[in-house]
Image (cartoon, rainbow, N blue to C red; front, side, top):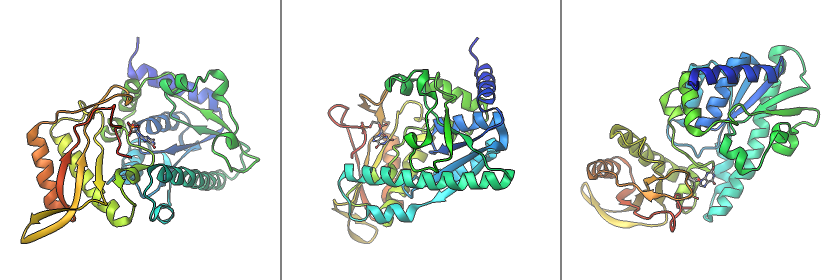
Length: 329
Ligand code: XMP
């Protein structure tokens, strides 16, 4: 019978068989899949796993802490964080085109990840006192990803430089994909079974390029701070209203190049609008805008305009997908 506990146990055994006495590295994104994959591998091989986390400075409030504190506390995993936020801000300066933002972030992310992996390997070598020539790279690939890429068993072993590129030539990585037969709901159940916090296990989808594609206009530190503060309020109130399971995700968007007149406190303001984009969906291919209760919208609007400097207006996106995409960029 399918129980999360049976499945978790079987997956841990399978990982142990695959890795043997080898060592593994897992990149964490802050999302569910990589966290659950890492937790399974940690169970299987303990400190022979090193997790790496790249902070690109485009994360939401508390996400880095969630990985560094909560994930580590729940799993006992060894973690290296690479803070590369300055680099990303530098490369993104003045860039407004959405696809250019994605390209820059994607390119830099590969570089960051390679550096993080190199650091992790050095750490493992010095901790173990040996040079390893064979290592494993853990990925949180799910069944729908496997089907989508047409991958059969043959994709289970690939060389590192085909995958992440630029890693030292003498290191050969084999892929470990403990979730490749599971659907999202099953991954969440296994994650709960492994004791991961609900904030990680129940996390809504969040794009790799992060808040950069939720600022319409150029990205800079102040704008990121503004968006981060508004986004944190939205998440808090949606959770308090019990809406997390009925909303697929709720992008919060800063229209950084738009200003409107407002009246706040003692006088006239000329601030930016924040857009709320709550959507209901099965798979993100199509979506409908979620009918969030007016009371919740009112609370969110009041809090954002009172608590977030430079924002004097909150608007609701009532477009389905199609024609609108879920993200604004
Ligand atoms: P759209 O905006 O295309 O989004 O309707 C569909 C789903 O994909 C997510 N998304 C991304 N995820 N990198 C990602 O990892 C991206 O560049 C990206 N763009 C969109 C989006 O959050 C939604 O879940």
